[in-house]
Length: 415
Ligand code: PMP
Image (cartoon, rainbow, N blue to C red; front, side, top):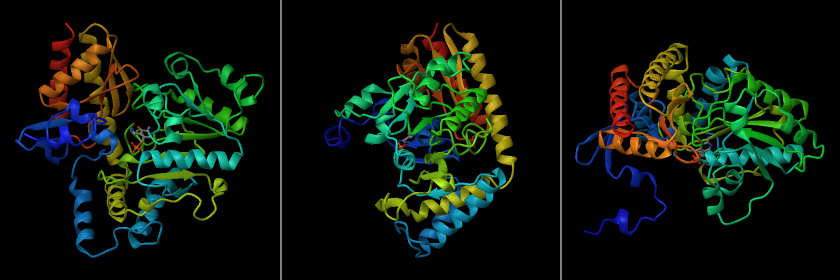
């Protein structure tokens, strides 16, 4: 039989190789195949489905909007849907946190917000260089790729990407380091051989890079250093933001205020493409039209984004629930790690992982979990971490059921 997935679709496809089933419907934390098999989803669309699949809270306003004859596509024109999103974002997210940011719609996806952040930092400072961290992931377009750590993906572009250097992330995050000797020499431009950067871009938890989580104290030190040397701090919250680590922004716990923030994935609340770049008002040096893109005005995404903010972020109840779910998740992951040799827990909040000393174990655990009806992917430079990212809305029973499957998978693989 001619299967177009095999004959027509490019070899570049990835997830469909790990999970060859054809998925037809989805609800909450469950995806169902064309044959009716159910899979528990501990992947959440790579972080784009924090509120689960087809959450009625966002789907009902979306269906109403689609049936109303309202504008679907509008580039950066004004629409009531965009106005409501901006007003709601200001009221429920920025104001309660005393954050003074301008908001920009940089294009539909995560890599677009990173590109906008890098361009803006270079324009504001007049400097070219950007520092990022080893094993970072910031997207697949050329600018974002230049600050991404994964050399397979970087070199796949076949073009030398310049003006970006990597800071050794592991020493900073896994050790007790709170001094910044090397970094300070670079920022001071005193014989380090690395140009003083326009900005440092950081994920507070490396989603693709192995679930390494920055300590709050370290993030505060980094922010202070950036301020001292007038280097802009960009937090890429594309994956760790929108409640994934417990608070709306992943940097809230550290009490820092980055100069630029990148958001995408779950900001639309529905899986529809949407991205935001936030920056301090004094950084708004853009000239009209200097950064544009056809799909900046995805009104259905504004509608679901507004509904998600109103449903989940109008008070603390959702955040408290996520804290409870996250505590239950980490307790069980700790038990699993303790029950076998060579495994440990990584990550923060609902962006968690199980690190295996033998990377082959992680791959096999993910494969076994799939066989048993659970979707989990691997992460890290050697795919040595099984990444656990259920929807934030998952019920306690579903969470425990998924973790039961994970326990069986780990015990089958690691003996
Ligand atoms: N930044 C981070 C931290 C990410 O995790 C991702 C996607 N995994 C991106 C940027 C790129 O987002 P997108 O794939 O939507 O372009």
